[in-house]
Length: 533
Image (cartoon, rainbow, N blue to C red):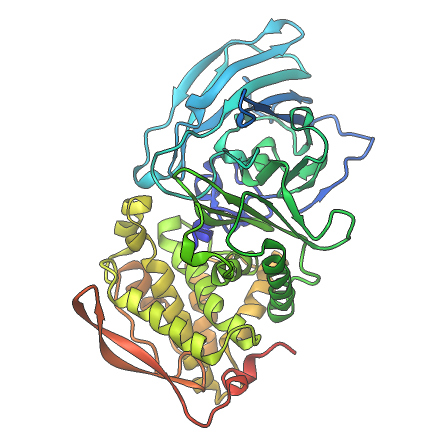
């Protein structure tokens, strides 16, 4: 399953919350990426940040580092006295990011700038913590910052694909996997550009924010919340075709990438109609890379984009499809977002609701069969009821972090079953005139307009008003304290039924649920009241 919107940590729709990184900087649905990326205008404000990325190749033609040159214009935020820079020591199981920064040089009109160093205490579970550089004197503006960031070496723990890794003659990763940035400047606008000279003709340089030179809203730290890819990458559709959806890839995949990205674009367009409140749906970019050495990375969403990172193809995969369920999951994150608050206490919402729609919406769109839908539901519930963390409190799961993938995914599974059950409760209370889809569209529209801050308490209040019964105590018992849930028998639509049943997983028996087809109910009638339009 995907690694995304724990992005309660990395994202918060449209803004960077400083070097707390959206929760930590805030990995997701604070979507720390900017709201827009457009061609840079000629007129510039007094305070801005310019950065150019130049991938460097070793003698064998593989990328060994990204050389960064940047210039900071303007000054410091009000109340700040000395320039401060920060880079991750660890970023979501990517180890040693700051340790791979070489040849750091900061100069202004008075010459080289020296720094004192501090470092945060380590955070368990592979979550981010940072190294900080503080200038030993006042600086003049503009000032120049340059360094080389070495690629992430092979080996190390598994985790999301934030580290910059070489593959197929190019390089890819995320800004958080290599950048050191000013964190107390008054700049709220950056210009990012590429020097691709070492690649030769035909190379691309692209980020979450756009192709080539782009303008990025937000402080310099906003650049950390974007994917990047440079080199001889494949593209869908061709570069000359205008489109709101683009994909880029490095490596050899066991499926037809262009064909699978056409499928993803079709699904993305359907999501835009289904969730409706983002109208039109924003531009979106998919990045895919194939790595020859571990860690391979998985799939992870940032704002308006995601990265699918994987290892070499296995023989049984050849000629097959892409992981379409994963594609759906990562794209849905853009509409779902998340709750404000501590990641460990809120990711049940971002990941649970995304997982619920990952299973239900492609089926409702006619992209998967009823048989595959039921098979997917049984796989979901098997993983939940056999999960050693099925009754584990949220904070305990958070402390485990990225060291155990099964434990980390318990909130995904528990959350998905909660939202399925909530849909059944809403339909029962309203006599079928209201659904979960209707509620979330209304709530997300309010959030998008800035009329509400969506917290656990606020969500519970919306549900309480919908049901005419208090919801918060149940939400806390289930998602915070770890109560086990058995959803309503019609939780996943009128065409399937669930029932308590023992399940066998790896030779062990667990009390679980199984889902079967309801004879006489057509697949298109399963969620008839909740379809778009």
